Image (cartoon, rainbow, N blue to C red; front, side, top):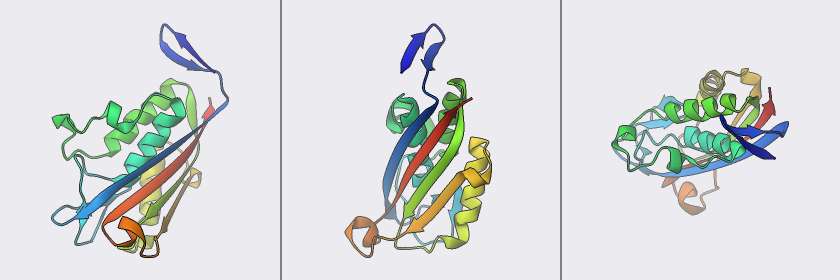
Length: 171
């Protein structure tokens, strides 16, 4: 249940769940940034910001849990101030809204799907970045990498996709 008050939204639920998903095309001459980590690869993701699909999916999951819109509404790709910006800004703002609503992170589960590059060496650093941004213990952050077995745009090495689920707990 959501109640409107003079200070904004007040939530009565003890727990809230959010889901987020993002996909971007791989292009040359852009850095590949996933979970705030710059990855040594000959392709990067095309987008208005740094196109970090991990942070974008996480942002949408946080915003979805609060039912306050999505990343495109709060950070439109038509706004020049977000051109090439670090996507941690989006996560920080979404997390600020979580805190403002008196919730904390219960846990986060994220899946990155890419045929290349191999992401295993970067997973721990991404987990640490996410835990730091969300002010939670790294044990509350699950991050996995998978492939699409050469099917669809991800499987054909044309894109990278991330999916995120978050559980918020009332403070």
